[in-house]
Image 1 (cartoon, rainbow, N blue to C red):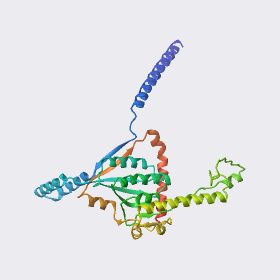
Image 2: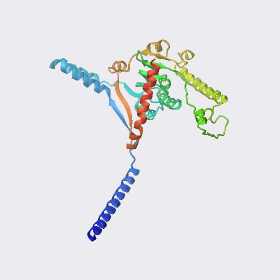
Image 3: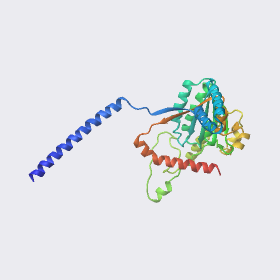
Image 4: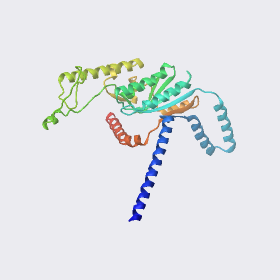
Length: 331
């Protein structure tokens, strides 16, 4: 028994010492991380011209004999030595809440720091739209390029609808694939109401507000006709602002004809002046490679472990929602 007692006491002291050392290490590590916080993300520039030239060189090496390849390679070197204006490529795959705007802001800021009036930005856009304030801010980020005199070309390969088209119309030129979904210049809001269900289960719902229209419609209370009318009025006002925004950036467009909430495919959108050309982003890039040096600009946000785990299910739901909306628009 005495041996067990001594052994237990020794074990307790050992555990206490290990825990104390661990606490000290954690405090030191925490202080160090507090002094030097890592950046929220990382900006990446990828030379797409170099990648394309490397691919061409590999193919030509297989197709040409040694002498022919040497001549071709020298010609390519002479061409690459010439100074050319730049084309900066930015990708925006928008979610419902337009959270990608944070990265877009950093990418636009970086481009504006180095771009000249001879340079151009190509935005490869894919979005079915989402919240008004989120996509309004995203469109404002693109407008920074226009204000600084930097040409902006927007290419839509799949879909730019609603808030997505709000972004697209900022472009000096808007391209779309033949069957890309374009338009949906409208506003929608929908919500369930559980008032009758609560009544059936003898559950009271109380809501307190200050201001006549602080809350117009609600999930749990009984909605009034006055509240519904006010809510509809707010939707109409938002729609009117949307139409004015589109008309400002595409004056050649008959807004009243297209601002019905409908969507169109690329071919149809061209006849309605919603876009300027039928062309995929790949074709446009390849056409620009001989005359411009092309860089892809991407700002990658860093995510902590907790955020990665916590956002996993949210991302799955977001992807499901976007796919469902794309199928809806494609009907």
